[in-house]
Picture 1 (cartoon, rainbow, N blue to C red):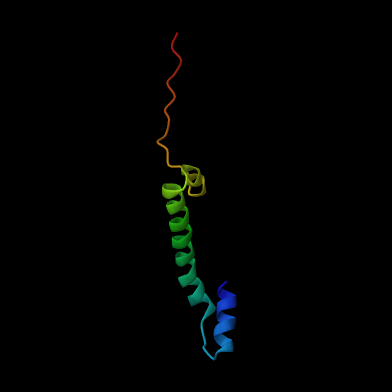
Picture 2 (picture 1 turned 180 degrees about the horizontal axis):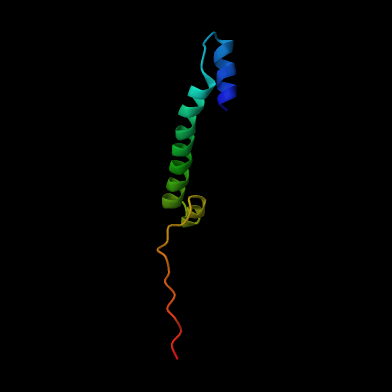
Length: 66
């Protein structure tokens, strides 16, 4: 995506550094992904939670007693 954005910018005479564009687009893409699926989980169905990873407290298995 960063390469495409740089190519479009060059077409219009703008010079963008690909590394800089990538460093900006990566957190933006992560933020958008999280926001979309968090809203889907809250407003549509809890099943969308698996796309974000389920946060569960660790289970402690008790040793078997005789």
